[in-house]
Image (cartoon, rainbow, N blue to C red; front, side):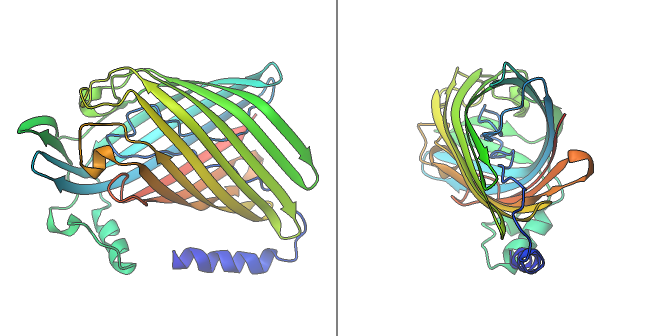
Length: 334
């Protein structure tokens, strides 16, 4: 974090004399990568930007997450120790002046990975607890959960496969722009289909429907662009295959973020992602608590209109999201 602030300060000094920048502040396209959360239909996309009529937009994202958490009580015990990689190809098409339709196709890899040493060093550098991560063998996969003496989840092998595909729609509700500001409001919906293998936690086995309201405000000043954005939505789920007797059928989710673009080619962003519990009949934090994670990073404009997002996320509410996740995303409008 200290290195990030140093870079931020340097860029500030270089960009201070500049006039109004046009780097819009937009959300990271990412979600909670916990193996028991990412299988459901919480949308990674929370932008209020709706693709223009007759145009396409594409995004390709990669999320690498390392998780380690162990909890138990008299009746339950859970261990989530592993690493996941999630690549998602997202395509959108705008039509009818205010609408867009699209599809998200994820590919998921789970295994022991390589990040345990990095995460332990990160925690040591910033005085953060390892939570027992340094007491077990590194770079292994072990997901397990038992309740009342019955093993309800046991995954000990690596694998890969297509995740649950989502169909998406968006409707522009408000879009106002002048030389000093740009405000947007959009309604979004998604339908997640059970295309992924739930036994390997590539999907949930449920069909999920989400509806969310997304908004953003960007102001252009002599110090660059200042932006704030957020979303709030709900999700309804059919009964899935993963801890099905404990799965909630309704959940809420949301994002809130703010950012600063000191120049027209770069921005810095902070984003909070949260969701209500996806499971019930448990007193363990990993299953029954509100989840909140923080994503820190920024975006860089590349040649030919491409934009690269780079972010690092951490679990604000400990054990409800991976300890550390790295996010990369590239997007473009055609």
